[in-house]
Image (cartoon, rainbow, N blue to C red; front, top):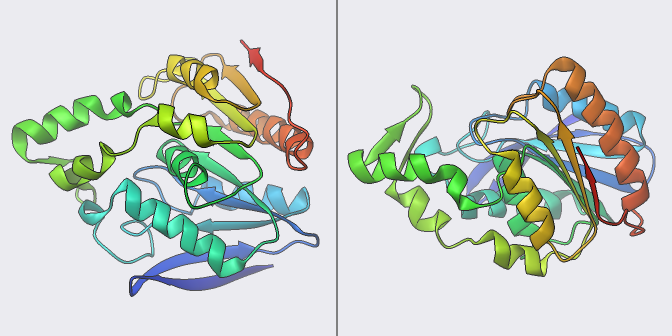
Length: 246
């Protein structure tokens, strides 16, 4: 069963959908930079319910059905949105699934105001250098417009620059699963291996050969199977140790 929820953050609406399951385990999904809660997130939530998890997908402000213009959003505002969603549902325990920039949100939230029991990260943005060409474009032109609905300006990078992944890695104390395409041209897989070395907790790294930043249908199915299997072991705090699968 799906139910729609309207959550308020500083008077602005955050649109969320809850997929209900029987049990006390929850999985909160964080979409990517210019994505939203639709598409693959609905399928992932349905799979989560099959695995026994209450699942939540939501739109960060500036995306999908939530309030605010995209250009006004920051990493900080996304962390605030994730925190508000968790506080709204009040799960007894929960894990986070973050894709691309959504993974960066989950990492820095876990290093700060939130306490998930595990983090699943697909094609994760970890180090800020993944946005270096965008930062240079904003520095040169004042605004970087991706399309009619998405643009960023100096405000984004003024906030973004206050976050450092190595600092977050020292504070994260829960198991982390990193699932990355070997041919990712947006966020190099080398960033995930470096992040795994920096994290002070149990980490699983899986390389998906031939996959880019967006996974194929077949790779997405593999991801779901592998991620939920790992999450089953990690959710209770058992962890998986440090592994690299190439």
